[in-house]
Image (cartoon, rainbow, N blue to C red; front, side, top):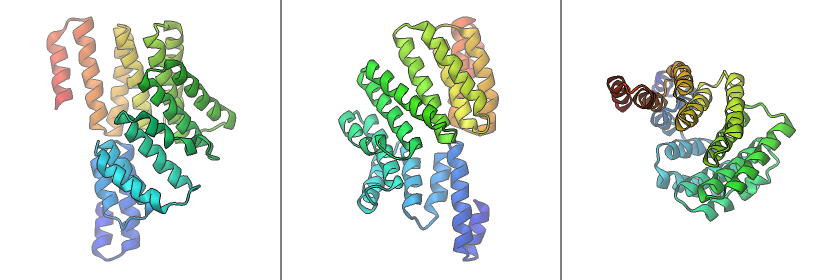
Length: 276
């Protein structure tokens, strides 16, 4: 960011743009959405940068501002452009959070039929998630499996595909947990663990997988196993620099100590660290 700032002061806008965007991308991957937003907003925005700004705003919970950018961009972009499809998927996620489920489905239609298999797989997962939020577990499982099938059929191995696959495993784990299907639940956990090993290069994705596994194990009252995953995720999150994920890990460690060991003081320490 400072490199970009110095180039900006020297009136070298091309170099400044490059380093501002690079700083924003790195901050976004670490979950530092406010820092990423600051970097992106320092750039004269084209539609690609506006998409990144809208992503940051969505991550920060500023849904109205994000929607304003998305809707303005959708008016300008060609019907069949991949960027337009990405904007539509992002908008569907906001609408789902606002409980506008049918509208969310409408904005997932184009992506569901996209020629880009990464986007199609992600759209199918998003459909699965919307069905889950509506309480239709059967449809949620169906679309999660469709998403995984797309990834398998095309042999996708991009970072986005790996994240989508991990999200599908997590969702299936939650559904199996809610149905009391421990056998399939533990199978989903095993597959998530394999994804975590495969995804060594992406620390945020790796951390989220480990945290998701720990939360399922906490619900099952498998506290020692949950603690093992949390300790591993603690080391991974330290590398990511994400304060939000660190707070989640510390909070869950507090749950382990409070529920399994009745170690109130230690639990309080973890809860206090998470709060800070």
